[in-house]
Image: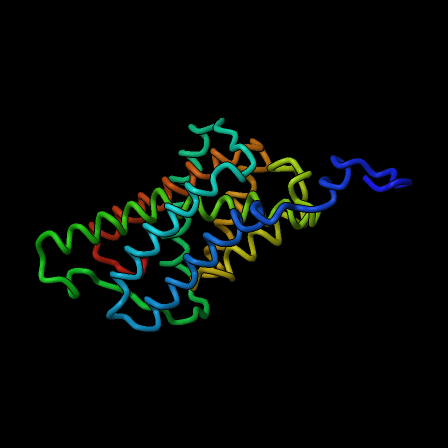
Length: 230
């Protein structure tokens, strides 16, 4: 500390977010969206890009795990119930409401693969990616990072789930519009997950809710072959 500088090292550290922490929250989402863009731009690459992003992003989150704020794993039963409720909300809104949606690739693996291990291997990765990886990655980004960053740019000094109407609205709209073609349905979903976080302060409950929703959507898709929900 320089002479005459009354600021201690902890105080200096409290005014900025270390670069590895920024990377932990931003890089996985950025890479996931980049791979998603490749798969949407070149449909023949969709299976390979989905497998690649699942493996790469999962490995990246694992490598950066120590930089995340510790996750509170509580209210998991409530999270599972909310996840099932959101599944009904998602399918119901998409079936009953007519609103403008941007076009996106609807991929039918049964039309792409001839069957056998390649088909079922891809379906397993697709279902696991949506049910296990995406909930962790998206909840870390939307309702951990973005929620807290909306309250304070030095987001590491904000408790996870701190009640804030602006954070709830911004994170929910960004979740809906930013990464989902079903933007209206996804915004309502974001509000429900956000309400769960507000009520419980548990990111773990939100991860479980998101995972249950996506797992049920995957089962629904495989039973009905309505690939638009995937």
